[in-house]
Length: 411
Ligand code: HGY
Ligand code: MN
Ligand code: MN
Image 1 (spheres, rainbow, N blue to C red):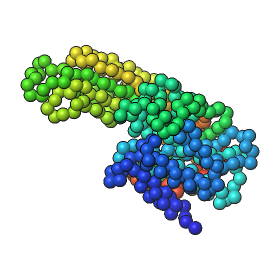
Image 2 (cartoon, protein in one colour; image 1 turned 180 degrees about the vertical axis):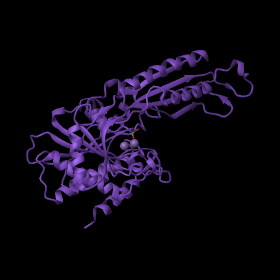
Image 3 (cartoon, rainbow, N blue to C red; image 1 turned 90 degrees about the horizontal axis):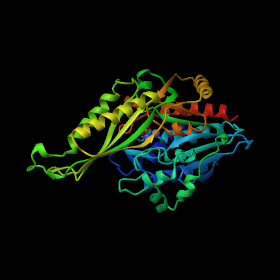
Image 4 (cartoon, helix red, strand yellow; image 1 turned 135 degrees about the vertical axis):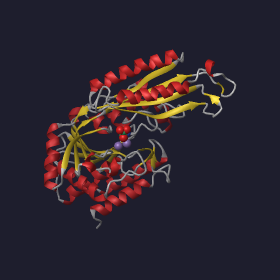
């Protein structure tokens, strides 16, 4: 009989194989073969625990451990299996196999939940393919509208609607997947911290009270494509120096200018045509602004939009500034924060109540139902990189705290 630690390492090794970039971390994108293989692996694991397996139209996977009183609201636990480009082996998967192992612990203790416990694997938590994250939890909370199915496109400019159809999924049904909130008592997610707070403060568990929310902006700056050698500087309409000014502006506005907790990232830039001796025709930037303070984030976005207009008007460049998603930061459920604290005492581990700079499905689920998160440390605070690492023993502690909390929530 394998120990918990052995099973953790087996899950990590198995899931890490499902990547498009074997020598550069884990890249696992929604509706691709690697994502499907990872889900198939988890389905088998869930069946071994006797969970009833279902999948919804957008592709969320559910494993139900039936409670003794099925009329009661359900306790949901889980996370995501998809990974960013060249990501790590722990983001998302720790919460998926962690929920499975927490259920196994309770089953081995002969615990009988009164409430159904549902293990959920959300699709597309990462914005990798469509530029917007948490598609699975957005579908379940009614946060996807028909226009999104058309406007959310992948790098080949194929819309989410088209991709759903290509995968034999019915877009109309995806739009009607909103859950009745009274059906769920709580959603609790185990996740790697993706920051260095726990490691720095030598704490074993993070109990999340606030989750920062992202505003995802797409900025396309139009230039005039011309020869890099024969075009005098005085007549150029070059979008690149303008993009450089915008990137510095994002850094200036989010660096303790308006808020101590804001962050700003330009993580992706597409230069067309992208040749060394051609003044670009256009530059597309993604701008990711986050904060736990909704009002300050709003002020930053307003200032950003105003100053971008000034920069581009002065350069006489046309542009499109579109807000692709604008999420609101959220507080976790206070009563369950206390449950998790109690669970840490029972397990005998140190803990710290803290905010999450990364967003998660728990952010989206908290729009409709009480949600909570348990963090385990990230070595050097690194995540979304191949060097992402959390020790097996640290994950085991997180799973034990999750098991104790699921017991409190479902008895
Ligand atoms: O970007 C995020 O915060 C999440 O990891 N997708
Ligand atoms: Mn992530
Ligand atoms: Mn994640």
